[in-house]
Length: 319
Image (cartoon, rainbow, N blue to C red; front, side, top):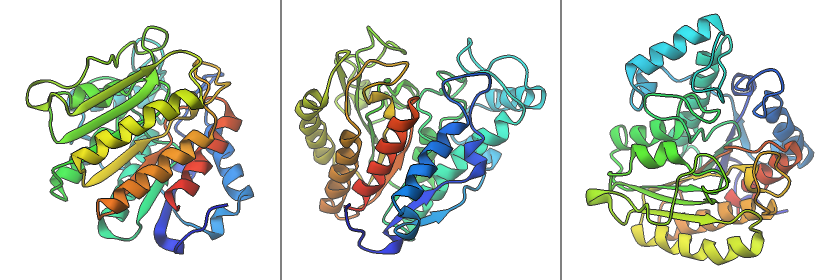
């Protein structure tokens, strides 16, 4: 097991309010995902090695930094009734979905603010990284895009001009990509299963940004069945791309659905990939002189996989 420099160096934001973010009736994104992570977290003794804090729900004005007012109102309405869907069918409403979604956004903001204020060097949030939600609609199990809100907070509250977003979830982070496709301040890099075989069907090599942001986005689609060797060939290119941009903050979406055996995706990574990604990005952030990394759990629907991968991320953040 990797050593931890100080107790406060890594913050984990976890608790019942974000555990409630999950969908009923056998949906792949169930409320038991947090429990699976927490059981492995306890088994590895991380409770005595990192600092744990509870999520704080985001205020509506924070959510509105990224999301359209009419959409936020729509989520509130469906949350009250628990009826219908929030998109075309992947993301069903349930009673309290607004509050659960606001807690996910708030958990990510707790992590981001802790790192920015120096209360922690790095941070991890298990039920977060909802990268498909767009500014005006839900998509792919994602209601509010906590990543988009965090980017806006980093710019507006803290004045950052270069923020890197790295995504190793099996699915392309389309909700982040298209929201900031023309924004040169957001450096985007994503290794994902080829969109020809997996939702949302985006993230082609030629999608590199628009206008002034052309060249600030890197998409690396890999074929179904891609393994650790494939990742090892792509990863140095991604790291070099991020380092050349010299970001002031790094957000890692470390979805565990890229691990072999996930029920809805087709990649073949091992959980060690996730630990490597967190470690390498942490070391990169240290070389850049700020050390700031926040990792977000993202997808992952094989419970053993997400437990292993996400706890490996915690180890990597502390390397």
